[in-house]
Length: 398
Ligand code: PLP
Image: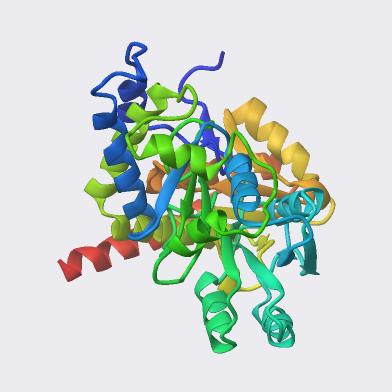
Protein backbone atom coordinates (compact mmCIF):
# COMPACT_ATOMS: atom_id res chain seq x y z
CA UNK A 1 0.00 0.00 0.00
CA UNK A 2 1.30 3.49 -0.77
CA UNK A 3 1.91 5.88 2.07
CA UNK A 4 -0.48 8.70 2.89
CA UNK A 5 -3.90 9.40 1.47
CA UNK A 6 -5.30 7.77 -1.63
CA UNK A 7 -6.91 10.67 -3.44
CA UNK A 8 -10.39 9.94 -4.72
CA UNK A 9 -11.58 12.27 -7.47
CA UNK A 10 -14.06 10.02 -9.15
CA UNK A 11 -17.60 11.37 -9.40
CA UNK A 12 -18.93 8.74 -7.02
CA UNK A 13 -18.46 7.02 -4.76
CA UNK A 14 -17.19 10.21 -3.17
CA UNK A 15 -15.20 10.68 0.00
CA UNK A 16 -17.15 9.58 3.05
CA UNK A 17 -16.48 12.05 5.89
CA UNK A 18 -14.97 10.51 9.05
CA UNK A 19 -17.99 11.69 11.00
CA UNK A 20 -20.28 9.67 8.74
CA UNK A 21 -18.03 6.61 8.82
CA UNK A 22 -17.96 6.68 12.60
CA UNK A 23 -21.73 7.07 12.74
CA UNK A 24 -22.11 3.86 10.76
CA UNK A 25 -19.87 1.91 13.09
CA UNK A 26 -22.66 0.68 15.35
CA UNK A 27 -23.76 -2.80 16.41
CA UNK A 28 -26.44 -4.58 14.42
CA UNK A 29 -29.88 -3.75 15.66
CA UNK A 30 -33.46 -4.95 15.58
CA UNK A 31 -35.21 -3.46 12.56
CA UNK A 32 -38.57 -4.34 14.10
CA UNK A 33 -37.84 -2.80 17.50
CA UNK A 34 -40.44 -0.39 18.87
CA UNK A 35 -37.96 2.49 18.87
CA UNK A 36 -36.58 1.86 15.34
CA UNK A 37 -38.96 4.45 13.81
CA UNK A 38 -37.30 7.15 15.90
CA UNK A 39 -34.30 6.64 13.60
CA UNK A 40 -36.15 6.24 10.30
CA UNK A 41 -39.12 8.63 10.43
CA UNK A 42 -36.94 11.76 10.75
CA UNK A 43 -34.83 10.49 7.84
CA UNK A 44 -37.85 10.39 5.54
CA UNK A 45 -38.78 13.89 6.65
CA UNK A 46 -35.28 15.30 6.22
CA UNK A 47 -34.78 13.67 2.83
CA UNK A 48 -37.87 15.54 1.68
CA UNK A 49 -36.16 18.76 2.72
CA UNK A 50 -33.05 17.79 0.73
CA UNK A 51 -35.21 17.21 -2.36
CA UNK A 52 -37.35 20.27 -1.59
CA UNK A 53 -40.39 18.04 -1.73
CA UNK A 54 -42.94 19.12 0.86
CA UNK A 55 -46.07 17.36 -0.28
CA UNK A 56 -44.95 14.03 -1.65
CA UNK A 57 -42.72 11.39 -0.12
CA UNK A 58 -39.26 9.85 -0.43
CA UNK A 59 -38.51 6.15 -0.70
CA UNK A 60 -35.20 4.61 0.33
CA UNK A 61 -34.32 1.44 -1.55
CA UNK A 62 -31.40 -0.81 -0.69
CA UNK A 63 -30.04 -0.54 -4.24
CA UNK A 64 -27.80 1.73 -6.20
CA UNK A 65 -29.38 4.62 -8.15
CA UNK A 66 -30.29 2.34 -11.05
CA UNK A 67 -32.78 0.52 -8.81
CA UNK A 68 -34.59 3.78 -8.12
CA UNK A 69 -34.77 4.46 -11.87
CA UNK A 70 -36.49 1.11 -12.25
CA UNK A 71 -38.82 1.76 -9.30
CA UNK A 72 -39.86 5.10 -10.80
CA UNK A 73 -40.82 3.53 -14.12
CA UNK A 74 -42.46 0.35 -12.82
CA UNK A 75 -44.70 2.10 -10.33
CA UNK A 76 -46.10 4.79 -12.57
CA UNK A 77 -45.98 3.56 -16.18
CA UNK A 78 -47.24 0.66 -18.27
CA UNK A 79 -45.65 -1.25 -21.15
CA UNK A 80 -46.27 0.66 -24.36
CA UNK A 81 -46.57 4.06 -22.66
CA UNK A 82 -45.07 6.89 -24.66
CA UNK A 83 -42.18 8.76 -23.05
CA UNK A 84 -39.86 11.50 -24.25
CA UNK A 85 -36.14 11.10 -23.55
CA UNK A 86 -32.77 12.45 -24.65
CA UNK A 87 -29.34 10.87 -24.79
CA UNK A 88 -26.08 12.76 -24.51
CA UNK A 89 -23.77 10.60 -22.40
CA UNK A 90 -23.42 7.14 -20.92
CA UNK A 91 -25.94 7.62 -18.09
CA UNK A 92 -28.70 9.16 -20.18
CA UNK A 93 -27.97 6.35 -22.65
CA UNK A 94 -28.41 3.68 -19.96
CA UNK A 95 -31.69 5.22 -18.83
CA UNK A 96 -32.97 5.12 -22.42
CA UNK A 97 -31.92 1.48 -22.64
CA UNK A 98 -33.78 0.67 -19.45
CA UNK A 99 -36.93 2.36 -20.74
CA UNK A 100 -36.79 0.34 -23.94
CA UNK A 101 -36.03 -2.92 -22.11
CA UNK A 102 -38.98 -2.35 -19.79
CA UNK A 103 -41.23 -1.95 -22.82
CA UNK A 104 -41.86 1.80 -22.95
CA UNK A 105 -42.47 3.43 -26.31
CA UNK A 106 -39.60 5.91 -26.01
CA UNK A 107 -38.96 8.79 -28.36
CA UNK A 108 -35.22 9.30 -27.88
CA UNK A 109 -33.57 12.50 -29.05
CA UNK A 110 -29.84 12.13 -29.61
CA UNK A 111 -27.73 15.14 -28.73
CA UNK A 112 -23.98 15.62 -29.05
CA UNK A 113 -22.08 14.34 -26.01
CA UNK A 114 -21.19 17.63 -24.39
CA UNK A 115 -24.59 19.32 -24.53
CA UNK A 116 -27.68 18.52 -22.46
CA UNK A 117 -31.45 18.21 -22.57
CA UNK A 118 -32.58 19.81 -25.87
CA UNK A 119 -35.38 22.11 -24.73
CA UNK A 120 -36.32 23.19 -28.26
CA UNK A 121 -36.69 19.62 -29.48
CA UNK A 122 -38.63 18.71 -26.35
CA UNK A 123 -40.91 21.66 -26.97
CA UNK A 124 -41.58 20.55 -30.55
CA UNK A 125 -42.45 17.03 -29.41
CA UNK A 126 -44.71 18.32 -26.65
CA UNK A 127 -46.43 20.82 -28.93
CA UNK A 128 -47.06 18.10 -31.51
CA UNK A 129 -48.56 15.76 -28.90
CA UNK A 130 -52.07 17.26 -28.96
CA UNK A 131 -53.72 14.12 -27.59
CA UNK A 132 -51.39 14.11 -24.59
CA UNK A 133 -50.14 10.61 -25.27
CA UNK A 134 -46.68 11.31 -23.83
CA UNK A 135 -46.93 10.20 -20.21
CA UNK A 136 -43.48 11.20 -19.00
CA UNK A 137 -40.59 13.41 -19.96
CA UNK A 138 -37.16 12.28 -18.74
CA UNK A 139 -34.41 14.69 -17.74
CA UNK A 140 -30.87 13.71 -16.81
CA UNK A 141 -30.15 16.67 -14.56
CA UNK A 142 -26.43 16.03 -14.42
CA UNK A 143 -24.81 13.77 -17.02
CA UNK A 144 -21.86 12.44 -15.09
CA UNK A 145 -20.12 11.03 -18.16
CA UNK A 146 -19.69 14.41 -19.84
CA UNK A 147 -19.91 16.91 -16.97
CA UNK A 148 -23.11 18.50 -18.26
CA UNK A 149 -25.98 19.98 -16.24
CA UNK A 150 -29.39 20.48 -17.84
CA UNK A 151 -32.22 22.87 -17.18
CA UNK A 152 -34.95 20.98 -15.33
CA UNK A 153 -37.00 24.10 -14.73
CA UNK A 154 -36.95 24.79 -18.47
CA UNK A 155 -38.71 21.46 -19.04
CA UNK A 156 -41.35 22.40 -16.47
CA UNK A 157 -41.92 25.71 -18.21
CA UNK A 158 -42.38 24.19 -21.62
CA UNK A 159 -44.86 21.61 -20.33
CA UNK A 160 -46.80 24.38 -18.60
CA UNK A 161 -46.71 26.54 -21.71
CA UNK A 162 -48.49 23.75 -23.60
CA UNK A 163 -50.68 22.72 -20.66
CA UNK A 164 -49.28 19.24 -21.10
CA UNK A 165 -49.89 16.82 -18.21
CA UNK A 166 -46.84 14.58 -18.67
CA UNK A 167 -44.89 13.68 -15.54
CA UNK A 168 -41.28 14.81 -15.24
CA UNK A 169 -38.73 12.15 -14.26
CA UNK A 170 -35.34 13.47 -13.14
CA UNK A 171 -32.08 11.59 -12.80
CA UNK A 172 -30.44 13.56 -10.01
CA UNK A 173 -27.93 10.89 -9.05
CA UNK A 174 -24.96 13.22 -9.40
CA UNK A 175 -26.73 16.51 -8.71
CA UNK A 176 -29.10 16.27 -5.77
CA UNK A 177 -27.57 17.53 -2.51
CA UNK A 178 -24.74 19.17 -4.51
CA UNK A 179 -26.45 21.32 -7.16
CA UNK A 180 -29.62 23.34 -6.67
CA UNK A 181 -32.67 21.15 -7.12
CA UNK A 182 -36.26 22.13 -6.27
CA UNK A 183 -38.75 19.37 -6.72
CA UNK A 184 -41.94 21.21 -5.77
CA UNK A 185 -41.07 24.47 -7.46
CA UNK A 186 -40.04 22.76 -10.69
CA UNK A 187 -42.94 20.34 -10.62
CA UNK A 188 -40.76 17.26 -10.76
CA UNK A 189 -42.73 14.06 -10.25
CA UNK A 190 -40.01 11.49 -9.70
CA UNK A 191 -36.43 12.35 -8.75
CA UNK A 192 -33.71 9.76 -8.28
CA UNK A 193 -30.54 10.09 -6.21
CA UNK A 194 -27.91 7.69 -4.92
CA UNK A 195 -26.19 7.53 -1.55
CA UNK A 196 -22.66 7.58 -2.95
CA UNK A 197 -22.51 11.10 -4.42
CA UNK A 198 -23.75 14.29 -2.79
CA UNK A 199 -25.05 12.35 0.20
CA UNK A 200 -21.46 11.32 1.05
CA UNK A 201 -22.25 7.69 1.90
CA UNK A 202 -21.06 4.40 0.46
CA UNK A 203 -22.94 3.07 -2.58
CA UNK A 204 -25.95 0.89 -1.86
CA UNK A 205 -28.88 3.09 -0.93
CA UNK A 206 -31.02 4.93 -3.44
CA UNK A 207 -33.53 7.67 -2.88
CA UNK A 208 -36.65 8.21 -4.95
CA UNK A 209 -38.55 11.38 -4.24
CA UNK A 210 -42.10 11.26 -5.53
CA UNK A 211 -44.72 13.98 -6.01
CA UNK A 212 -48.38 13.63 -5.02
CA UNK A 213 -49.22 13.41 -8.72
CA UNK A 214 -46.83 10.49 -9.24
CA UNK A 215 -48.17 8.78 -6.12
CA UNK A 216 -51.67 9.13 -7.54
CA UNK A 217 -50.43 7.73 -10.86
CA UNK A 218 -49.04 4.71 -9.02
CA UNK A 219 -52.48 4.08 -7.50
CA UNK A 220 -54.86 4.86 -10.34
CA UNK A 221 -56.75 2.21 -12.28
CA UNK A 222 -54.57 2.18 -15.39
CA UNK A 223 -52.69 -1.11 -15.61
CA UNK A 224 -49.00 -0.70 -14.66
CA UNK A 225 -45.90 -2.79 -15.03
CA UNK A 226 -45.49 -5.77 -12.76
CA UNK A 227 -43.56 -4.85 -9.65
CA UNK A 228 -42.80 -6.47 -6.37
CA UNK A 229 -39.58 -5.55 -4.56
CA UNK A 230 -39.86 -1.93 -5.65
CA UNK A 231 -43.62 -1.58 -5.11
CA UNK A 232 -44.57 1.82 -3.71
CA UNK A 233 -47.67 0.34 -2.06
CA UNK A 234 -45.68 -2.22 -0.05
CA UNK A 235 -43.16 0.43 0.95
CA UNK A 236 -45.83 2.93 2.01
CA UNK A 237 -47.65 0.44 4.24
CA UNK A 238 -44.41 -0.18 6.12
CA UNK A 239 -42.67 3.19 5.83
CA UNK A 240 -45.62 5.06 7.29
CA UNK A 241 -44.77 3.41 10.59
CA UNK A 242 -41.01 3.69 10.14
CA UNK A 243 -40.47 0.11 8.97
CA UNK A 244 -39.62 -1.68 5.72
CA UNK A 245 -41.12 -4.60 3.81
CA UNK A 246 -37.69 -6.32 3.93
CA UNK A 247 -34.50 -6.14 5.98
CA UNK A 248 -33.23 -2.57 5.64
CA UNK A 249 -29.53 -1.59 5.78
CA UNK A 250 -29.64 -0.17 9.29
CA UNK A 251 -26.05 1.07 9.44
CA UNK A 252 -26.65 3.16 6.37
CA UNK A 253 -29.43 4.93 8.18
CA UNK A 254 -27.06 6.04 10.93
CA UNK A 255 -24.66 7.30 8.28
CA UNK A 256 -27.47 9.08 6.48
CA UNK A 257 -28.56 10.73 9.73
CA UNK A 258 -25.11 12.26 10.10
CA UNK A 259 -24.75 13.12 6.42
CA UNK A 260 -28.07 14.99 6.47
CA UNK A 261 -27.05 16.75 9.70
CA UNK A 262 -23.84 17.87 8.01
CA UNK A 263 -25.67 19.13 4.92
CA UNK A 264 -28.15 21.10 7.05
CA UNK A 265 -25.46 22.44 9.39
CA UNK A 266 -23.63 23.84 6.37
CA UNK A 267 -26.94 24.89 4.82
CA UNK A 268 -28.04 23.59 1.44
CA UNK A 269 -27.52 26.97 -0.24
CA UNK A 270 -23.95 27.05 1.09
CA UNK A 271 -23.39 23.48 -0.07
CA UNK A 272 -24.45 24.49 -3.59
CA UNK A 273 -22.30 27.63 -3.48
CA UNK A 274 -19.27 25.62 -2.33
CA UNK A 275 -19.74 23.14 -5.15
CA UNK A 276 -19.94 25.98 -7.63
CA UNK A 277 -16.82 27.64 -6.26
CA UNK A 278 -14.80 24.43 -6.23
CA UNK A 279 -15.98 23.48 -9.72
CA UNK A 280 -15.19 26.89 -11.15
CA UNK A 281 -11.67 26.68 -9.72
CA UNK A 282 -11.19 23.29 -11.38
CA UNK A 283 -12.47 24.68 -14.68
CA UNK A 284 -10.11 27.67 -14.44
CA UNK A 285 -7.31 25.22 -13.68
CA UNK A 286 -8.07 23.15 -16.76
CA UNK A 287 -8.21 26.28 -18.89
CA UNK A 288 -4.91 27.38 -17.32
CA UNK A 289 -3.34 24.12 -18.58
CA UNK A 290 -4.65 24.93 -22.06
CA UNK A 291 -7.08 22.02 -22.14
CA UNK A 292 -10.72 21.87 -23.19
CA UNK A 293 -13.80 20.47 -21.53
CA UNK A 294 -16.17 17.91 -23.00
CA UNK A 295 -19.04 20.30 -22.14
CA UNK A 296 -19.42 22.34 -25.30
CA UNK A 297 -20.54 25.64 -23.75
CA UNK A 298 -20.58 27.28 -20.30
CA UNK A 299 -24.37 26.88 -20.02
CA UNK A 300 -23.77 23.14 -19.60
CA UNK A 301 -20.94 23.30 -17.05
CA UNK A 302 -21.50 20.90 -14.19
CA UNK A 303 -20.60 21.86 -10.64
CA UNK A 304 -20.08 18.24 -9.59
CA UNK A 305 -17.88 16.73 -12.31
CA UNK A 306 -15.61 18.06 -15.04
CA UNK A 307 -14.84 15.94 -18.10
CA UNK A 308 -11.55 17.00 -19.68
CA UNK A 309 -10.46 16.31 -23.27
CA UNK A 310 -6.84 15.22 -23.46
CA UNK A 311 -4.73 16.74 -26.26
CA UNK A 312 -4.51 14.96 -29.61
CA UNK A 313 -2.03 12.08 -29.46
CA UNK A 314 -2.39 11.58 -25.69
CA UNK A 315 -4.25 8.55 -24.33
CA UNK A 316 -6.59 9.50 -21.49
CA UNK A 317 -6.42 5.94 -20.19
CA UNK A 318 -2.65 6.33 -19.78
CA UNK A 319 -3.26 9.54 -17.83
CA UNK A 320 -5.63 7.64 -15.54
CA UNK A 321 -3.21 4.76 -15.02
CA UNK A 322 -0.25 7.05 -14.31
CA UNK A 323 -2.27 9.18 -11.90
CA UNK A 324 -3.31 6.05 -10.05
CA UNK A 325 0.00 4.21 -10.00
CA UNK A 326 2.45 7.08 -9.54
CA UNK A 327 0.43 9.71 -7.74
CA UNK A 328 -2.16 7.74 -5.74
CA UNK A 329 -4.96 9.62 -7.44
CA UNK A 330 -8.12 8.20 -8.95
CA UNK A 331 -9.85 10.21 -11.64
CA UNK A 332 -13.00 9.17 -13.48
CA UNK A 333 -12.46 7.43 -16.80
CA UNK A 334 -13.89 8.32 -20.18
CA UNK A 335 -16.99 6.18 -20.58
CA UNK A 336 -18.08 4.37 -23.74
CA UNK A 337 -17.23 6.49 -26.80
CA UNK A 338 -15.19 8.87 -24.62
CA UNK A 339 -12.78 6.14 -23.51
CA UNK A 340 -9.19 7.25 -24.13
CA UNK A 341 -10.30 10.78 -25.01
CA UNK A 342 -11.48 12.10 -21.68
CA UNK A 343 -10.70 11.90 -18.01
CA UNK A 344 -12.98 13.28 -15.34
CA UNK A 345 -12.42 15.09 -12.08
CA UNK A 346 -15.23 14.46 -9.63
CA UNK A 347 -15.60 17.43 -7.29
CA UNK A 348 -18.66 16.67 -5.24
CA UNK A 349 -19.42 15.76 -1.69
CA UNK A 350 -17.05 16.30 1.19
CA UNK A 351 -14.24 18.38 -0.30
CA UNK A 352 -12.53 21.74 -0.25
CA UNK A 353 -10.26 24.01 -2.26
CA UNK A 354 -6.95 22.40 -1.39
CA UNK A 355 -8.29 18.99 -2.32
CA UNK A 356 -9.20 20.40 -5.73
CA UNK A 357 -5.73 21.90 -6.04
CA UNK A 358 -4.21 18.51 -5.35
CA UNK A 359 -6.40 17.00 -8.07
CA UNK A 360 -5.13 19.59 -10.52
CA UNK A 361 -1.52 19.06 -9.43
CA UNK A 362 -1.85 15.31 -9.90
CA UNK A 363 -3.54 15.78 -13.27
CA UNK A 364 -0.75 18.07 -14.47
CA UNK A 365 1.92 15.51 -13.58
CA UNK A 366 0.03 12.56 -15.05
CA UNK A 367 -0.73 14.49 -18.25
CA UNK A 368 2.89 15.55 -18.63
CA UNK A 369 4.09 11.98 -17.98
CA UNK A 370 1.64 10.70 -20.61
CA UNK A 371 3.17 13.05 -23.19
CA UNK A 372 0.97 16.15 -23.02
CA UNK A 373 2.69 19.51 -23.28
CA UNK A 374 1.64 20.95 -19.98
CA UNK A 375 3.40 23.68 -18.10
CA UNK A 376 3.57 22.33 -14.58
CA UNK A 377 1.81 24.60 -12.15
CA UNK A 378 -0.24 26.41 -14.79
CA UNK A 379 -3.53 24.82 -13.76
CA UNK A 380 -2.85 24.96 -10.06
CA UNK A 381 -1.91 28.64 -10.26
CA UNK A 382 -5.08 29.56 -12.13
CA UNK A 383 -7.23 27.75 -9.57
CA UNK A 384 -5.31 29.23 -6.64
CA UNK A 385 -5.86 32.72 -8.00
CA UNK A 386 -9.58 32.08 -8.35
CA UNK A 387 -10.00 30.56 -4.90
CA UNK A 388 -8.11 33.43 -3.26
CA UNK A 389 -10.19 35.97 -5.18
CA UNK A 390 -13.44 34.28 -4.11
CA UNK A 391 -12.40 34.21 -0.50
CA UNK A 392 -11.35 37.85 -0.59
CA UNK A 393 -14.73 38.76 -2.10
CA UNK A 394 -16.50 36.70 0.58
CA UNK A 395 -14.47 38.33 3.35
CA UNK A 396 -15.35 41.79 2.03
CA UNK A 397 -19.04 41.06 1.95
CA UNK A 398 -19.01 39.93 5.57
N1 PLP B 1 -27.28 8.38 -13.33
C1 PLP B 1 -26.18 9.11 -13.20
C2 PLP B 1 -26.20 10.53 -13.66
C3 PLP B 1 -25.03 8.55 -12.64
O1 PLP B 1 -23.93 9.28 -12.50
C4 PLP B 1 -25.06 7.20 -12.23
C5 PLP B 1 -23.86 6.58 -11.64
O2 PLP B 1 -22.79 7.13 -11.62
C6 PLP B 1 -26.23 6.49 -12.39
C7 PLP B 1 -27.33 7.11 -12.92
C8 PLP B 1 -26.32 5.08 -11.97
O3 PLP B 1 -26.32 5.02 -10.59
P1 PLP B 1 -25.81 3.76 -9.80
O4 PLP B 1 -24.45 3.44 -10.30
O5 PLP B 1 -25.85 4.23 -8.39
O6 PLP B 1 -26.79 2.66 -10.07
